[in-house]
Image (cartoon, rainbow, N blue to C red):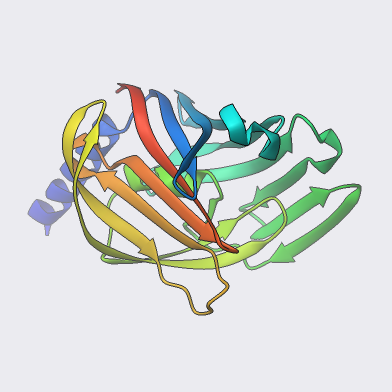
Length: 231
């Protein structure tokens, strides 16, 4: 038993050492195969607190689709089980009145939302719940990744149950070189549900190198083009 406990402690320590302290990642963004713009994600950690931001800017012929900057922000704690978000914000520079905020109260196991002057709450917050942004980077912080990965995901206006299935993702060319990847794809129950596929690189601490989201006939895909990761 002692040997098992020591081994587990060592594994958690190794995971903590491998977890990044700071990341600056840039993804090219495509809409139905056509270049739309770029997504810049930044992660910073101070002690056990983290701030994660994502800014999407359109350019080129499709800039009219997103005239402003879409900014997502997740803040919370880094725990032995991974990221534990406390607040999520979804904002658009061209529509400040559409700011959406979700606050996660882990003591009360509840979520409080605010959007366009309205407020509402929901109970039932479960361990391991992530927000719309942190779910992608939880792959880098969770101590283990099962083949069948289930979690709650909080957005700026609702709470959904997500279930991902793992498969081999093949080799992808990245700014860090060619990387072998694993693919996690959301298992959907209805034809109109949002599908999400994330390609992570195990050799790079499960860094997300490609992300694809499909909904309502539109597919958005992020492909990593620049990466700075400091442990």
